[in-house]
Length: 177
Image 1 (cartoon, rainbow, N blue to C red):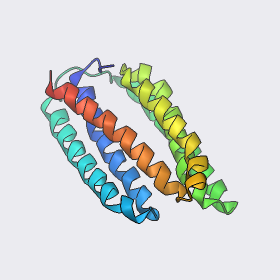
Image 2 (cartoon, rainbow, N blue to C red; image 1 turned 90 degrees about the vertical axis):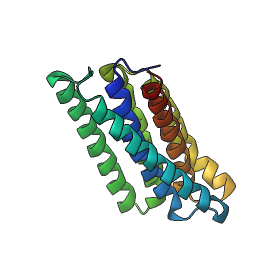
Image 3 (tube, rainbow, N blue to C red; image 1 turned 45 degrees about the vertical axis):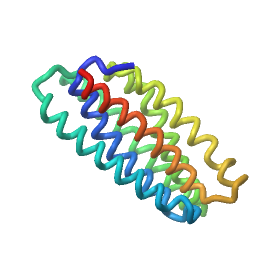
């Protein structure tokens, strides 16, 4: 499950840490009161992991990486398509008066975009992240409704935890190398 290159694992820790913090933030839209402190703690921990990953990326900058001009173009294309689909879907959901579905929609698009990134970046961990994020996105709405919790709280907590766990794993990989 390790990245082929230490620099890429460090960068993954930085990126996933940053986005985990963002998802914990989204979960704070209207969570159960008992969740608020945990969401804040998760956001802070995720930012610390992001900073640590950033420092380690810088320290390993001259090491090998899966990125080359072709990989970079393909990565940019995948992420561009992801942002476009997420944005269009969010706009449609807002126009239909269903803004509560935007968080799980964006999460689903994020989960799906990891499938082509895993082989591109040669990081098998991304397959697990793809599966977990996609599943979490699909179960967020029925779970939130069954528990009468805001959909964004359920989605943000789940995706935040998944990305934080992957960021911590990536950080651990770098630190143990």
